[in-house]
Image (cartoon, rainbow, N blue to C red):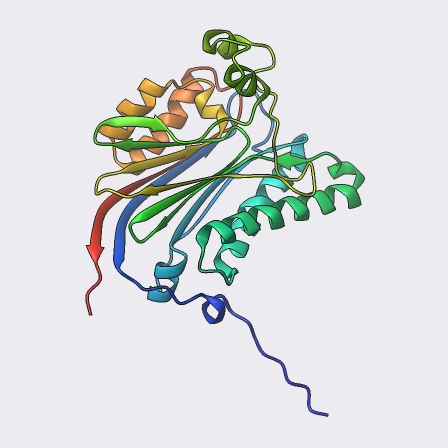
Length: 275
């Protein structure tokens, strides 16, 4: 009997979605090991779509992950997460990008968890994940852990994500003030991460795009030393590449106590697709 095989490509399973708006973007990225760590457990990746079917259905993807578990384990977890998230999101057959993003998070956490169980030196490894996906005239922010997403819109800078940390949950419950949380000894204890369990819940935030919007995603090595006002001024006053380098540089000047990674994405136009 003749064996029949078929090559499955991302293009062949991209769902059909009407292409109405082409976003024009500029972006920049920067990462640094910092002044204390011996290696960089942060990872960042991006995928810029070019095919019209891919632009319509999946859009452009930007991801930052901050690994944990020590040395090679954390670095391994963050690298698996960035690549798996993008691959699974882009190849997912659903036209609902929220479904595709959640499936990508699930695939990433299970991949990491399986590896940590199989290799003793990787036991307990995990990673945060923050992503921004730009599709047509909307943005989808995905978050697990304490890496953050910000948006500058019409001069106003807003944190779009909520940290999955013990102190953040305690503040939300009214048991601790914001001022106490910022100096608490457990402020870096996260309550959600990819890889520590077989399944993890992610936060999904959908936003309408406006011309001139600037999105920034980063690891906590940046926000540990750079406050929200510094972020606003930098995103408003510099190009995406310059802003990325400046924010990481400011984190180093402020102490550089952790790996620091930034991706900045600016919406330079929303072009209607005709014909």
